Picture (cartoon, rainbow, N blue to C red):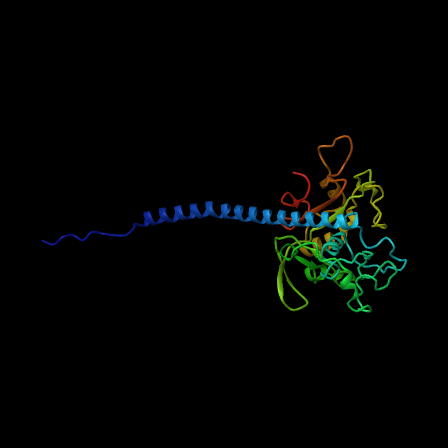
Length: 295
């Protein structure tokens, strides 16, 4: 008598159930992996901020104050040619040097690298003094692994302002690496959004967008912080990225306002400086920003 062969394998219903379970597990796993990845990048960004904080403390110990963050130069039109030189670029100059080779103590914070007299006493871009300025400089204040230094021209080559004087000066970028850039050497790299740096004016009494005068970007007119310190960087980035809701002066002053102080509009960290990373979404002023102030 022949024995009946036993059937093996899954039925169609069983197969559909297995696929549904796998889909459910994948649906649960992907958000968890994304959350872990975001947490790791947030921790890395906070680590970069900590390194900048330590470096700025060392800079202040050496020179008595934090680096300035005013846009351009207060003496533009009196021997200082106009050019893009924002707070973020001045932060990079202080901690890395105008050309990443160290800060010069006679810097006049000019985009062209000259000293207060318009001569080659600091960075000497024309190399009139040979290697003399290199011997006079401080070594960079921050380690290579936490620099993420690029120029505006590197980041936003497609924008007309990226060809303006000063756009080839370095600034710090965050760790998110959302932009692929081609460097002058021809190599490519991943760059994050520029880190915004604003130095407080301890004599300031206000946190008021109505005091801002776009015609005088170096003058905060009584505010502790000046929203115009990095205005060109923000405008270029938002134009290139097509951001519909701009991080304008009204948004800036609301963003840095300390809600615990109710007697008047008052910013966080009125005695030092603030740092802002655009976070994972690459947009300034949104909840995922990484900052050195607030909760």
